[in-house]
Length: 89
Image (cartoon, rainbow, N blue to C red; front, side, top):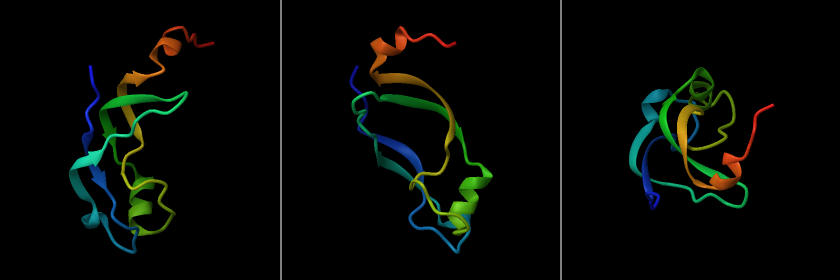
């Protein structure tokens, strides 16, 4: 199955000083293509936590332009064969 090329994302166009009103919902945010040794995970749920709010307000540097970094999802492409043989210790 082919991966989609666009996704829904809460995009932070620029860091503050501001508030969460500058967050924009995008239906056309590019889906990244996994590189060597990477996987693509389809997020089922992702919250926006307080560290995201600090970035939006300009209190801390933004690490990415998409809010939400604590998510739950499924691996949909990438090095799946190698992951299937991975054992947690």
